[in-house]
Image (cartoon, rainbow, N blue to C red; front, top):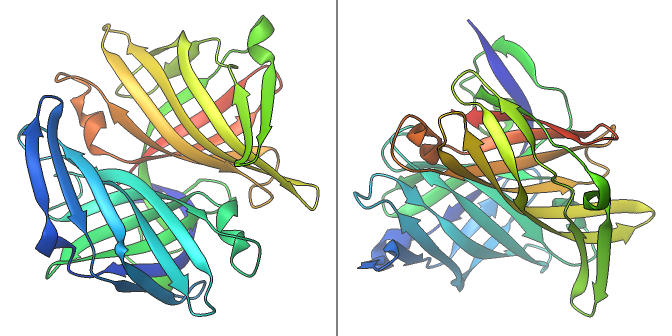
Length: 305
């Protein structure tokens, strides 16, 4: 059977040790929170080998009221075998869609100049699973190759060259007037690239369709120029309204870099929406393929299986 396939490149497997042994949670006025820290661990794979630094790997996640859906959000500090320090930041979903103890995560990396700088250049995703108190995450870069239709793959690690996904929506943003203006802030802590280019626009898909609401998109980006190549890291929040009036918060990270050709970029997306016909969006991590068209941006968004 043919499936929608998104090409990926296996980077490494991250093992976070004994994360379940120090979990804390509480029900606060803003919903359940779930905290966990790691006791070391390691990263092993074709693109990175190293260790997780103890006490520098913490998750400050959230959960649904019934705790069936968890929203991991945390940081892991990895020391590569050559001594390089790498910060891995992630968000994601652990839900019934992915199975008991399993999750899909979005990763961005930060490190200094040197042999591991390449980690900045790709939006990464992780396939997580809790085993015997440890969290084991296979981490892949979303590659710049085109999405395709092909047979489903059950491979893992280096044998997994694409991931299976389901089409959610086609989105075309609208750029209008002053909304096309960009602002760059160069500060001692790094340059920020601010855009209010979202002037609204429609989205369509087999299970959900509607419009993006103008004025409800926040798009602060980190920007860096190195060897005449632009590197942008996105952290975007934007509000959708489905045809039936349901509000949907769409938040995503993303990367533009030389890793992605033809003025394209890749994103990893999470949704929040109330109970009802679109609640299935709360349970998935999605991948977006973005392309600049001159008068706006075109996104194709797919839910990871």
